Image (cartoon, rainbow, N blue to C red):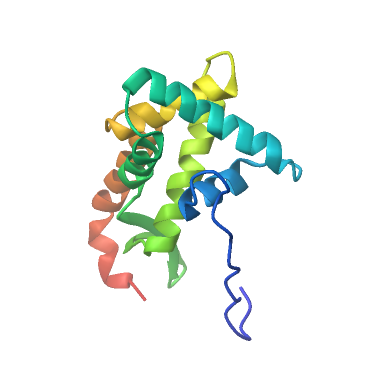
Length: 156
């Protein structure tokens, strides 16, 4: 981490179809090797699958899924007198959103459905209903933070 100054935040443009910043951030995280149009197509097709399946606005389902996966607590390593402790800490909103998106994408990629659109749609629907692998990841993180509550006084 640089000691000079904080890195300046880049402004991202909202996605072209829904004019949503979170959707744009998700597309950017989904993108591999700079192939943004492919990432957009995958997301928009999965939104079509969600709309057919649930008969609801897919952006609302997406937002719900991202909000449900956001962690409130996480553990961070802290060295104190030669020992390393896992110290539970609150998660800043920007980091919570980034973790949520990352976990959703990781779990989508591990799924066994045939196409990425189907995987994404299934994972987003499950996350919006508070179940699925990404929700389990959030609960594991919370459980670990809860288990290490005794080291909370090492917060800095």
